[in-house]
Length: 164
Image (cartoon, rainbow, N blue to C red; front, top):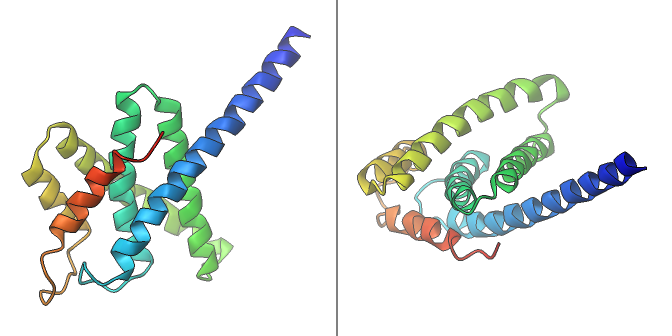
């Protein structure tokens, strides 16, 4: 009986963790869409741009969650983020045969970007952070728009205002 009670509790805890992770993911998505869709970055809105901006903001949130000891929630957020990428690709018509290859590539790219962002943010190295953002998010940006870096840096700072 004891183990059954424990199993039920663990299942409820996991369900609550996914609920909290999903809420954080939705909040981050709500912050990504205005940045990518209004043209301020000088890049056409689409999956690739949304991927780049979301990985940037999720990286910032992961730091925050780790700082307050919410490592399981951080891992759940990362997992839910990739479930979202999978869902988006399938909506775009990527087939079951191709989805695995695309997701492996996305995971590889996202993990490298996350590492670069987190290292720069944890060291408060604004130069390294801006270089990583320029290289990953803004590499194809039009020169005809106002410098988009301040918008992205403000979006990173705004992640700290998301209620946990």
